[in-house]
Image (cartoon, rainbow, N blue to C red; front, top):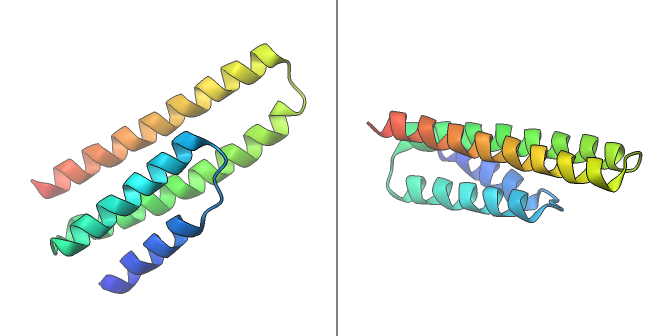
Length: 105
């Protein structure tokens, strides 16, 4: 059971992030994984590892697509796109927290 968690933590800790919010979200997810593991909450920890990996992949995809679009857009469009990205990341974080809370009950 620990192998998937260690793999997720390793993946998250080596992801290149350019957005400070993405970095913060990934760091918090990693800390949550380690905390759950230390408390031996295996089901919640496994779910958190899965959610973290999915969020990291999504953040990586958003960042890649966004950087391509930013090259072709105006400053106002760039700001709107950045706000949309932040909202998407916040929604992902909220979904993760809700899933984790439900599994802990």
